Length: 226
Image (cartoon, rainbow, N blue to C red; front, top):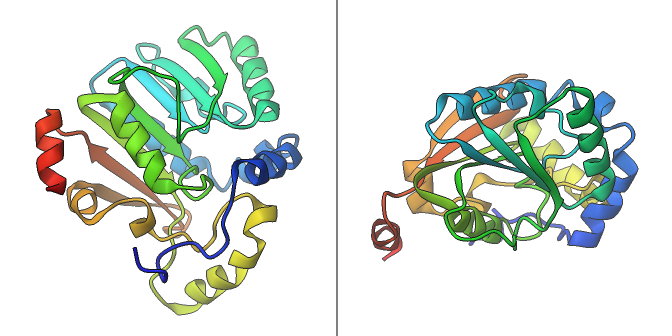
C-alpha cells in the first residue's frame, strides 16, 4: 500500500476508547445530524437485502437501531462500553425486540463463528480502527458466502481544498478518534474496489455508502486474490 494512501497518524484501541469515552455523552448531538443521511441510507440498504442476521459494527449509542425492519435480527458490537450503555438504554426505551445483543468487542478480532451473519454493516468505523485491512478480513470471515458487507464512511478527497483541509486535520487523529485523511484504498484492495458499489451520501457527498457482495463460495473468494 502506498504511504500516500495510508493514514498518517496511527490509532490504537486505547486511543479510540479514550476518544469515545469523551464523546459518549454528546455523540448524538454533535454527530447525529451530520451522519444521519449516511446512517439512513445504510440501514435502508440493509433492509432491502435478503437475509435475517445483521451485524452492526461500531453500533455506538444505537442511533441506527430503531430504523431496522423488524424482520432483521441485529447484533451490535463496539469497542466503547460507554457508548454501548447508551445503546442498551435506547433498546429498552424503544422496545427494540429485534436487537439480539450489544457486545463490547474488537471489530478486528471478533469471537463470532465463521459465516455467522447474512449482512455486516460498519457505519463511520473504517477510519477509526487501527487496521482497516483486518476489519475487512474479519467481516469477510463472519459473513456468509453470498451475503453483503456495507460501509458508510468519509474517505479522503482526491484533490482541491478539501484534500488540504483533511491532510491538515490528520494531526489531530488521536484526539478526534478517527482519520480525516482516510483513503478508500486503505480499506478495499483493488479486486474488491472493482466489485463494490459506491454511492455518494449527503451532505455534499461528504460520506460514501459502499456495498460489497460476498463471493458465493470460499473458492471464488480465493480466486479473486490469486
